[in-house]
Length: 95
Image (cartoon, rainbow, N blue to C red; front, top):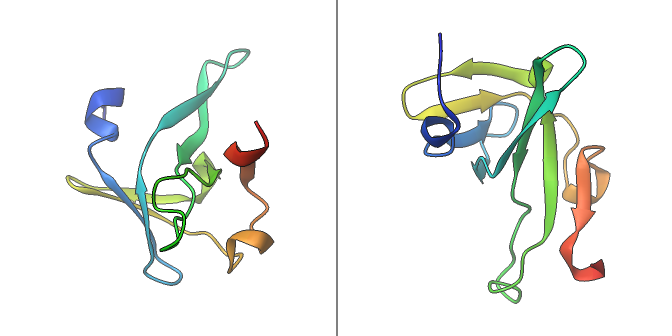
């Protein structure tokens, strides 16, 4: 199956572990040495009080993508709350 980045970013990412919607893909990470996709990046969570601020971005390794469907990308992320998530890339507030 082939898909462009424009097609992928229109799909919603959902965690099958807890059913939480993680948002839409904001970036795709490639390994240049192997010319393979390493994973995807989705936006961090927003709370009621920081609706207008971006949170941390989450990297989801390709190995944790369960299924890419027509409208949704299913991923399997164990980690619970964002503070316990080992895939947090950066915190926009610190930049």
